[in-house]
Length: 113
Length: 114
Image (tube, rainbow over all chains, first blue to last red; front, side):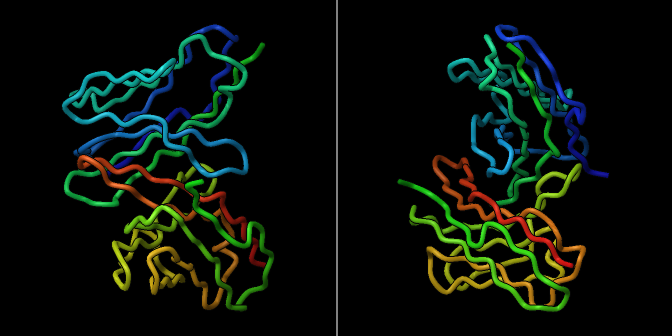
């Protein structure tokens, strides 16, 4: 069966450390993968997109890797801050499927001062 | 300011009482979607629209209807709500640039069906 897995348990880290979140998928062939941030009671906000032929993409303190062999994406936040605390969602865009995003359930990140 | 708006933000209703959740975007996007979000399940697409008068089912369309009479508006209609439709609903508007899609989500509508 097709599925996307993100750690259901919250990730707790100390301020200043690097947070690493994982997104694994099976039986999909995504054209690209996206990461979103969602705060409580708010809609998801787009952060980064990485294509299937890209290994790594960076934006400020954020870095995303995409390994289509392992079927895994890693999302890193360096020098984390308490303001980074939120739930992070990964989403796959399926090849040839316009407007067809499949979302993971998300991982909650808590950055402690 | 580019945005997607939804109304109402919170709604409590009873089984069988028809309701409509409105969605509007000011970005002139052709593509819009409705999702529901339930604990542990992630966002699931209900319906999407590729343009005015063009709509199609997503992954969980049962019990829902949509319409797209104008580009900016994409209302979600529950003709006869049931308790299993209690959920958090998000409307999204999609831009497509360079073959890549980015979705802009509304603030969400929390629905409770008694």
